[in-house]
Amino acid sequence: MGISNYDISSTVGTLVSQRLVRKLCKKCAKKREFTEKEKNLILQIGERYNTKFDLEGKYTYDAVGCKQCNNSGYYERIGAFEVLSLEDNIRELIVKGASSIEIRNEALKGSYRPLLVDCINKVIDGITNLDEIDRKIIIY
Image (cartoon, rainbow, N blue to C red):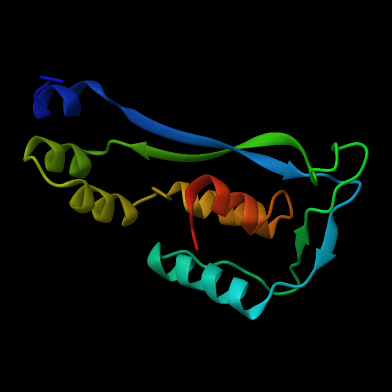
């Protein structure tokens, strides 16, 4: 775009990314335990992003379908977010022309948590399920 790294680092304060994911229909969602495959996937994502997910006593839900949700199993949407505040260490990397991987690795040392982490938290809270997350950001 013709913007210098210095101009980007000095003018941008926060970056936000979002996806809208479908919420499970409360009337027809079917509660079940996480499969071993699902647990392993969630734990691997947690390890990758240095986040601990507590699956103890937690359940997931399958989308079933009813009259209220037009037989889709989902009703309404909710935002999933990632927020990156450009702190001094991140600004320095941008000015130096660091790769996006280097910037992301440095951000993970701080308060930054990727979109996928927010999505997994929404799955654990029973708001949506892994199928919907996979449909939006491909995790399998």
